[in-house]
Length: 256
Image (cartoon, rainbow, N blue to C red):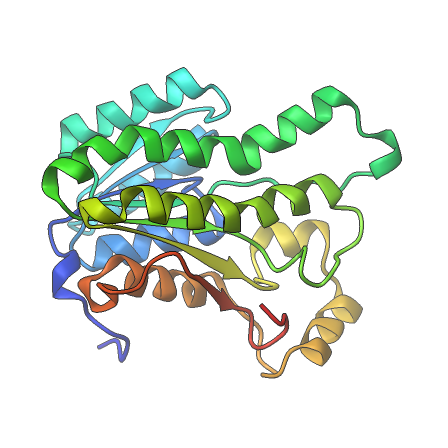
Protein backbone atom coordinates (compact mmCIF):
# COMPACT_ATOMS: atom_id res chain seq x y z
CA UNK A 1 0.00 0.00 0.00
CA UNK A 2 1.29 3.45 -0.93
CA UNK A 3 2.01 5.82 1.94
CA UNK A 4 1.31 8.83 -0.26
CA UNK A 5 -1.90 10.87 -0.20
CA UNK A 6 -5.18 9.84 -1.78
CA UNK A 7 -7.33 12.72 -3.08
CA UNK A 8 -11.04 11.84 -3.24
CA UNK A 9 -11.75 15.07 -5.11
CA UNK A 10 -9.74 13.79 -8.10
CA UNK A 11 -11.78 10.61 -8.50
CA UNK A 12 -13.70 10.60 -11.81
CA UNK A 13 -12.38 14.07 -12.73
CA UNK A 14 -11.46 14.67 -16.40
CA UNK A 15 -7.78 15.62 -16.69
CA UNK A 16 -5.80 16.76 -19.73
CA UNK A 17 -2.00 16.48 -19.73
CA UNK A 18 0.38 17.57 -22.47
CA UNK A 19 3.66 15.80 -23.18
CA UNK A 20 2.47 12.77 -21.25
CA UNK A 21 4.29 9.93 -22.97
CA UNK A 22 7.57 10.00 -21.06
CA UNK A 23 9.51 11.56 -18.20
CA UNK A 24 7.59 13.87 -15.89
CA UNK A 25 4.59 13.68 -18.21
CA UNK A 26 4.29 9.92 -17.93
CA UNK A 27 4.51 10.20 -14.13
CA UNK A 28 1.70 12.76 -14.23
CA UNK A 29 -0.48 10.49 -16.36
CA UNK A 30 0.14 7.49 -14.12
CA UNK A 31 -0.38 9.35 -10.83
CA UNK A 32 -3.62 11.01 -11.91
CA UNK A 33 -4.90 7.70 -13.29
CA UNK A 34 -4.13 5.99 -9.99
CA UNK A 35 -6.24 8.62 -8.23
CA UNK A 36 -9.23 7.47 -10.29
CA UNK A 37 -9.21 10.45 -12.66
CA UNK A 38 -10.24 10.17 -16.30
CA UNK A 39 -6.94 11.06 -17.95
CA UNK A 40 -6.49 12.27 -21.50
CA UNK A 41 -3.02 13.07 -22.72
CA UNK A 42 -1.23 14.13 -25.87
CA UNK A 43 2.31 13.69 -27.08
CA UNK A 44 4.19 13.74 -30.37
CA UNK A 45 5.68 10.30 -29.54
CA UNK A 46 2.88 8.02 -30.71
CA UNK A 47 4.48 4.66 -29.84
CA UNK A 48 5.36 5.68 -26.28
CA UNK A 49 1.99 7.30 -25.69
CA UNK A 50 0.09 4.32 -27.05
CA UNK A 51 2.11 1.92 -24.91
CA UNK A 52 1.54 3.93 -21.73
CA UNK A 53 -2.20 4.22 -22.35
CA UNK A 54 -2.39 0.49 -23.07
CA UNK A 55 -0.52 -0.46 -19.91
CA UNK A 56 -2.66 1.76 -17.70
CA UNK A 57 -5.85 0.64 -19.40
CA UNK A 58 -4.92 -2.99 -18.78
CA UNK A 59 -4.57 -2.10 -15.10
CA UNK A 60 -8.14 -0.83 -15.06
CA UNK A 61 -7.49 2.90 -15.35
CA UNK A 62 -9.38 5.27 -17.64
CA UNK A 63 -6.72 6.74 -19.90
CA UNK A 64 -7.02 8.00 -23.48
CA UNK A 65 -4.07 9.03 -25.67
CA UNK A 66 -4.03 11.19 -28.79
CA UNK A 67 -0.86 11.61 -30.83
CA UNK A 68 -0.50 15.30 -31.57
CA UNK A 69 2.11 17.92 -32.41
CA UNK A 70 0.97 20.63 -30.03
CA UNK A 71 2.91 23.30 -31.90
CA UNK A 72 0.03 22.99 -34.40
CA UNK A 73 -2.46 25.01 -32.38
CA UNK A 74 -5.49 24.04 -34.46
CA UNK A 75 -4.67 20.35 -34.19
CA UNK A 76 -3.98 20.61 -30.47
CA UNK A 77 -7.23 22.37 -29.67
CA UNK A 78 -9.05 19.78 -31.78
CA UNK A 79 -7.35 17.02 -29.76
CA UNK A 80 -8.51 18.64 -26.53
CA UNK A 81 -12.06 18.68 -27.92
CA UNK A 82 -11.73 15.00 -28.82
CA UNK A 83 -10.58 14.19 -25.27
CA UNK A 84 -13.60 16.07 -23.93
CA UNK A 85 -15.85 13.91 -26.10
CA UNK A 86 -14.36 10.81 -24.46
CA UNK A 87 -14.03 11.90 -20.83
CA UNK A 88 -16.05 15.10 -20.51
CA UNK A 89 -14.83 18.69 -20.32
CA UNK A 90 -11.48 18.91 -18.54
CA UNK A 91 -11.59 20.14 -14.96
CA UNK A 92 -7.82 19.80 -14.61
CA UNK A 93 -5.24 20.88 -17.20
CA UNK A 94 -1.53 20.24 -16.76
CA UNK A 95 0.56 22.16 -19.29
CA UNK A 96 3.60 19.93 -19.03
CA UNK A 97 5.05 19.63 -22.54
CA UNK A 98 8.41 21.28 -23.20
CA UNK A 99 11.71 20.71 -24.98
CA UNK A 100 15.01 21.65 -23.38
CA UNK A 101 17.25 21.34 -26.42
CA UNK A 102 20.52 23.16 -25.79
CA UNK A 103 21.36 26.08 -28.07
CA UNK A 104 23.97 28.77 -28.62
CA UNK A 105 22.38 32.20 -28.21
CA UNK A 106 24.65 33.67 -30.92
CA UNK A 107 23.30 31.22 -33.50
CA UNK A 108 19.58 31.41 -32.70
CA UNK A 109 17.53 32.42 -35.75
CA UNK A 110 14.05 34.00 -35.70
CA UNK A 111 12.65 30.61 -36.73
CA UNK A 112 14.52 28.90 -33.90
CA UNK A 113 13.03 31.41 -31.48
CA UNK A 114 9.49 30.85 -32.75
CA UNK A 115 9.89 27.07 -32.69
CA UNK A 116 11.12 27.05 -29.10
CA UNK A 117 8.44 29.42 -27.92
CA UNK A 118 5.82 27.24 -29.60
CA UNK A 119 6.89 24.07 -27.79
CA UNK A 120 7.68 25.69 -24.43
CA UNK A 121 5.06 28.42 -23.97
CA UNK A 122 2.53 29.08 -26.74
CA UNK A 123 0.69 25.77 -26.43
CA UNK A 124 0.00 26.41 -22.73
CA UNK A 125 -1.99 29.56 -23.46
CA UNK A 126 -4.04 27.97 -26.21
CA UNK A 127 -4.74 24.87 -24.12
CA UNK A 128 -6.09 27.17 -21.41
CA UNK A 129 -8.21 28.88 -24.05
CA UNK A 130 -9.57 25.49 -25.11
CA UNK A 131 -10.48 24.13 -21.67
CA UNK A 132 -11.60 27.33 -19.95
CA UNK A 133 -15.18 27.40 -21.35
CA UNK A 134 -15.93 24.00 -19.82
CA UNK A 135 -14.39 25.01 -16.52
CA UNK A 136 -16.33 28.29 -16.52
CA UNK A 137 -19.54 26.34 -17.10
CA UNK A 138 -18.71 24.05 -14.19
CA UNK A 139 -17.64 27.03 -12.02
CA UNK A 140 -14.47 25.18 -11.04
CA UNK A 141 -11.19 23.93 -12.41
CA UNK A 142 -7.45 23.74 -11.83
CA UNK A 143 -4.76 24.68 -14.33
CA UNK A 144 -1.13 23.82 -13.67
CA UNK A 145 1.60 25.38 -15.79
CA UNK A 146 4.98 23.66 -15.64
CA UNK A 147 7.98 25.97 -15.35
CA UNK A 148 11.65 25.30 -14.63
CA UNK A 149 14.32 26.43 -12.21
CA UNK A 150 16.73 26.73 -15.16
CA UNK A 151 16.31 30.49 -15.47
CA UNK A 152 16.58 30.96 -11.71
CA UNK A 153 19.95 29.21 -11.54
CA UNK A 154 21.21 30.48 -14.94
CA UNK A 155 21.67 27.10 -16.59
CA UNK A 156 23.98 27.61 -19.59
CA UNK A 157 23.04 27.04 -23.23
CA UNK A 158 19.28 27.43 -22.71
CA UNK A 159 18.48 31.14 -23.15
CA UNK A 160 15.32 30.82 -25.26
CA UNK A 161 14.00 27.92 -23.18
CA UNK A 162 14.67 29.89 -20.01
CA UNK A 163 12.89 32.93 -21.43
CA UNK A 164 9.84 30.81 -22.16
CA UNK A 165 9.90 29.19 -18.74
CA UNK A 166 10.25 32.53 -16.98
CA UNK A 167 7.21 33.70 -18.94
CA UNK A 168 5.20 30.85 -17.43
CA UNK A 169 5.12 32.86 -14.21
CA UNK A 170 3.53 35.80 -16.02
CA UNK A 171 1.03 33.55 -17.78
CA UNK A 172 0.04 31.98 -14.47
CA UNK A 173 -0.46 35.28 -12.69
CA UNK A 174 -2.40 36.77 -15.60
CA UNK A 175 -4.75 33.82 -16.07
CA UNK A 176 -5.31 33.42 -12.34
CA UNK A 177 -6.72 36.94 -12.47
CA UNK A 178 -8.72 36.35 -15.63
CA UNK A 179 -10.33 33.10 -14.48
CA UNK A 180 -10.54 33.40 -10.70
CA UNK A 181 -14.05 34.85 -10.68
CA UNK A 182 -15.22 31.61 -12.32
CA UNK A 183 -13.72 29.47 -9.58
CA UNK A 184 -10.74 28.40 -11.68
CA UNK A 185 -7.33 28.21 -10.05
CA UNK A 186 -4.07 28.66 -12.00
CA UNK A 187 -0.69 27.81 -10.50
CA UNK A 188 2.84 27.08 -11.66
CA UNK A 189 4.75 23.92 -10.80
CA UNK A 190 8.51 24.41 -11.04
CA UNK A 191 10.62 21.24 -11.21
CA UNK A 192 14.28 21.27 -10.30
CA UNK A 193 16.89 18.93 -11.71
CA UNK A 194 14.59 15.97 -12.28
CA UNK A 195 16.28 12.68 -13.07
CA UNK A 196 14.57 11.32 -16.18
CA UNK A 197 15.70 8.87 -18.83
CA UNK A 198 16.15 11.76 -21.26
CA UNK A 199 18.34 13.72 -18.87
CA UNK A 200 20.45 10.66 -18.12
CA UNK A 201 20.87 9.93 -21.80
CA UNK A 202 21.72 13.43 -22.98
CA UNK A 203 23.08 15.59 -20.18
CA UNK A 204 23.86 13.83 -16.94
CA UNK A 205 26.94 11.90 -15.90
CA UNK A 206 28.44 11.01 -12.51
CA UNK A 207 30.11 14.40 -12.15
CA UNK A 208 27.00 16.42 -13.00
CA UNK A 209 24.88 14.24 -10.71
CA UNK A 210 27.25 15.03 -7.85
CA UNK A 211 27.03 18.72 -8.77
CA UNK A 212 23.25 18.63 -8.54
CA UNK A 213 23.33 17.19 -5.03
CA UNK A 214 25.94 19.75 -3.98
CA UNK A 215 23.62 22.60 -5.00
CA UNK A 216 20.49 21.23 -3.34
CA UNK A 217 19.60 21.66 0.32
CA UNK A 218 18.35 18.08 0.39
CA UNK A 219 20.98 15.58 -0.75
CA UNK A 220 18.51 13.37 -2.59
CA UNK A 221 17.71 13.43 -6.29
CA UNK A 222 14.31 14.64 -7.52
CA UNK A 223 12.36 12.15 -9.65
CA UNK A 224 9.25 12.50 -11.86
CA UNK A 225 6.93 11.10 -9.20
CA UNK A 226 8.06 13.82 -6.79
CA UNK A 227 6.84 16.43 -9.26
CA UNK A 228 3.62 14.55 -10.01
CA UNK A 229 2.66 14.45 -6.34
CA UNK A 230 2.75 18.24 -6.16
CA UNK A 231 0.56 18.38 -9.27
CA UNK A 232 -1.98 16.12 -7.57
CA UNK A 233 -2.18 18.51 -4.62
CA UNK A 234 -2.57 21.56 -6.85
CA UNK A 235 -5.32 19.84 -8.83
CA UNK A 236 -7.23 18.56 -5.80
CA UNK A 237 -9.69 20.48 -3.66
CA UNK A 238 -7.10 20.38 -0.87
CA UNK A 239 -5.58 23.45 -2.57
CA UNK A 240 -8.94 25.15 -3.13
CA UNK A 241 -7.77 28.59 -1.99
CA UNK A 242 -4.41 28.59 -3.74
CA UNK A 243 -4.06 30.41 -7.07
CA UNK A 244 -1.59 32.61 -8.92
CA UNK A 245 1.36 31.02 -7.11
CA UNK A 246 4.42 28.99 -8.07
CA UNK A 247 5.65 25.89 -6.29
CA UNK A 248 9.20 24.58 -6.53
CA UNK A 249 9.97 20.87 -6.35
CA UNK A 250 13.76 21.16 -6.47
CA UNK A 251 15.09 19.81 -3.16
CA UNK A 252 15.93 23.36 -2.13
CA UNK A 253 18.13 24.56 -5.01
CA UNK A 254 16.59 27.75 -6.40
CA UNK A 255 15.55 30.81 -4.43
CA UNK A 256 12.11 31.14 -6.07
